[in-house]
Image (cartoon, rainbow, N blue to C red):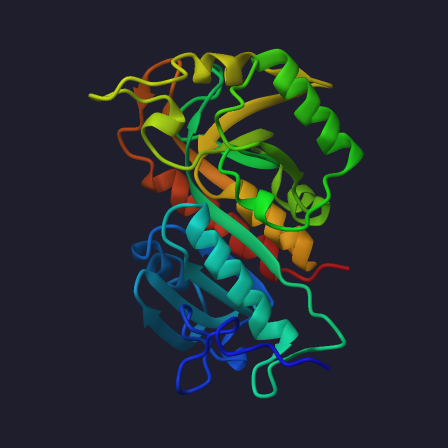
Length: 293
């Protein structure tokens, strides 16, 4: 079997993966990812015990036990570029022999849930509510760099998206990716659901104007009005499409659950989203660690 060169699979001197600085034994199969490094300690405070704490740059990882089940929480930082790093290195930890630099013949599937914040794109979704993403709409372009095949359903959504929005060909080609059905069905109760648009930035790519004018000044309106087969675009954030795309391509399960901190059409911003975030964290922890057939 061919070895992966050191320039491609970059490891630290202690043989941990380069950015995460983790060894395989420091990772659980059930993983929560968050953008904010400060949210890692909040989530791990609910663990029964913590076995590993590792920090490198903006990536903070805590692995422990909850309800008798191993669980990991780690921060990715913001954006799909960081998701690209984190997902590839998480996969390397379980599916590549780091000593011999060879791909393992038997693959391990991880369960990865993103807990984050987002802005609602439908007026009837109030701040402090929860959105579980059935699809990611990638406006970031990341998956265009990989051999990645969209399903028939996803291709139909993309065709309708171009038709309904007249989306500019100057931007990166969008893509749709569906959440892991197992994780989506596990988390969708008592939450809004729909398509989550993933942007490559916080300001212009999400239709915000400060000093620079935008090439597409009706982006949010176009996203708001899109509808196909009862699927609507319900919120905006910066990680989900890459998380879904890379996870499926690598054989992992992924789903995103976000607290709505702003509504872009009612022009509201949450005065305090922390109680809703705490409830979401506890819900996800329970669902990931309860016994499932």
